[in-house]
Every structure is written in C-alpha cells, then in structure tokens.
Length: 62
Length: 391
Image (cartoon, rainbow over all chains, first blue to last red; front, side):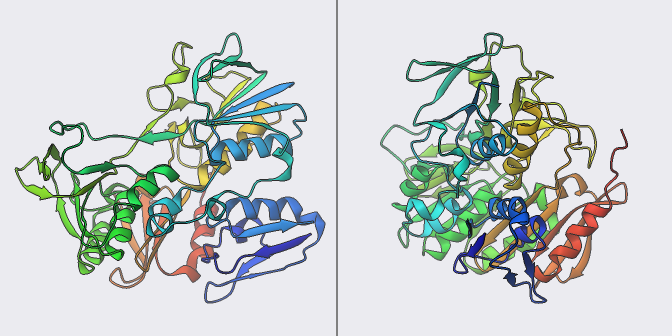
C-alpha cells in the first residue's frame, strides 16, 4: 500500500493522525509527517484517515 | 439485503455507500442525488471556490473503488417514499424498491422571509450551498461591489472574509450581538468581529432584514444598507418533505435512535446533518449536528446498524473548523452545550488561544484560535473525560 499526501493541499488539520496514528503524526510545530509505505494490515485505518481529511489531500494506492 | 437505496449523494450518502460495502453488503447499491455533480466537498465553497474558479476534481471526494459498481442516479431528486411498501419515488417518474434505505438528503439553505423585491429589481440574492451557488456568487464578487451578508454564522463569516479579500465592500447584518455567538460565545465572537473590522468589514448587529428595496436592504431599526449583492446565510432546513406521510417525527430532521435507525425500524437509517440522534457522550437528547465530521461518523455506524451488526454505542466526538483570512479556528466536542461556562485554557484571545466550554463543571468542548500544536492534547482530554455508558 502506498500513501500519497498532496502537501499543497494539506493544511495540518491533523484529523488523519487520530484515525491512523501509526502512519500519520504531527511534529512539535503541528506539521504533518507520514509513513509513505505502511503495512497492509493498516489499510482500514489509512482509508479512514483519507476519508476524514478536510482537504481530501490523502490518496491510497495498492 | 438484496438492494439498498441511499437517498442523497453528498458526503453522507457517499460514505454510507462505502461503509455498506466495507461492512459486507454485496448486493445492489443505488445512490440517488438531486445535484448533477458527483459527491464534492462543501467547505471550500465559501472559501477557495468563491475566490477563484476551481475545477470539479479539485473538490470532488475521493471515492473508494468498492462503490464504482453502484447505480448512481445523479441529477435525480427524490419526491416521495412509502416505507411500508419499501419504495422510493424519483422525480423522473421511476420507483425504486429497497430492502434497506439510507436517508442522507441533508439540508438546503433557509431563505430570508422579507418582502419588497420585484423580480429583476434590487440586489442580486444568493445562497451558498452548492457548487452552482458558489459559481453564481463568484461571478458577482468584483472589487468594489457592495455586498451585504445576512447572517453571522460559519457561512456568513467565511463569505465576508473571502469577499473582503477579493476587494468587495462588505456589510454583515445579523440579529445576534456578536458573530458566531451560539457556537463560540460572546468573547470569542467579539474577537472575531474585531479581526473582521480591522480588514474593513462593517457589522450591523442586533437587527434583522425588514425588506428588500430597489437599492439594497432596509433593516428592522430603519437603517438602509446599499447593496448590489445580498448573501443569505441564515441557516438551513432539513430536506425531509419526501418522507411525509409515513408517520415519522420530522419536526427537526429525521428522529433516530442511538443506532441511527429511524423510529426503531430495522430497515431504515439516517446519516449526516438530516439525522437527529442522541449522543451519550453528552446526554440522551436527540440533536442534529451540522459539522463536517458527522456524515462520515454516522455513515459508518448506520451502515452496520442497517446490516444488523451493531453492538457498540454511537458517541462521536464532533469537530469543525473555519478559515477566515489567516485565521484558523478548530473545535472538538460540543462547545454550544457549554456556552454558560467558558474558560481560557491557553494563550491570549487577541493572538492565539484555546477556550474550554463546560457543562456542570465538565469540559464538553474546546475551540482553538491557532495553537495547532496543542490539538492532540485537547482532543485527548475531551475523549478521556467521557462517561462511557455501561449498558
């Protein structure tokens, strides 16, 4: 599974962090960091993270 | 279930369809929507989409591959339903029978009930709910145009900020004493008003629109407002007329139980801001919640209820945000329930701050003005403080 975040769209709302904390996190300054090739076992959590992104900046590919 | 019909093809309807697939529904899926567009994100309509022409794919929702085989009936309004016969009627004359029904028809803008305007005369009147609404308003927002925004809630404040940034001459008219008073409280509202005023937005608060005139508006205190364009941002009305005649409580959206089933029916659920449901995180009072997080949350729970799989209580933590100029507002929980006891938790309202909203001494909502780095901490505080039902 490949996770792509359009960083031009991302505005650091952090909603993805709550859905998939293993994959997404905010650094000390509140900026998004993420794992681009997470384990397939996390797929449902990553799909949820993409769903809840207010800017719809997250894409999930096989 | 052989066929599930989802009525409404915006965020709630889309997520319901996806969650039905995720929860194992392999049968037919019909999604009916009155707009011609595929499901798209509405928050940008009062911001980016109003500021500049934006391609549809920029605001269209990411959709899961699992709903590609659904029968999407877009551009087709629903006109009625017979829940006893399990059938919905569509504007194109067809009837669609179902084994399971998801109600996701959402809201439409409330319109000003003010007399005086002849067709074709006076200011151009607008609302902001759909892509087409935003495009029509954008065409009018030239620099120097005189815009009156009626209503000082989320949409009103965001439209005012966007239009002012585009160079419009903006006046906000509202009956409350401060903008966004109900969700945020007086101190926060006053700070928001000052920030708008520093950018040149004029506020005429504590008044309503008495009538439209040839040159704009006349207000309840006799004040005249010259306006070329009027935006009506005075709240929303649930789209439930199509459900009339089925004995449902439609007094404010569709009354649901804690599993989002409509009046205890096993074969009908409601999702999104048309659903009125209790949230045991706070109390047992059913409420509609018009926040962006709710369609997705309700869709996930309702899909499982419809397929008969729910055991867990549904107790979402609502969240919302608003962007006005360079200002980022973020909220978790239900600040409107704690408006009587608002405490400064961090910072300074004139710069960046976090306010806590309390009911019976308990923190029920948080609103942040900036302070993004503190977000996970306050969200955890709200989640941890919940009285989880034991039954």
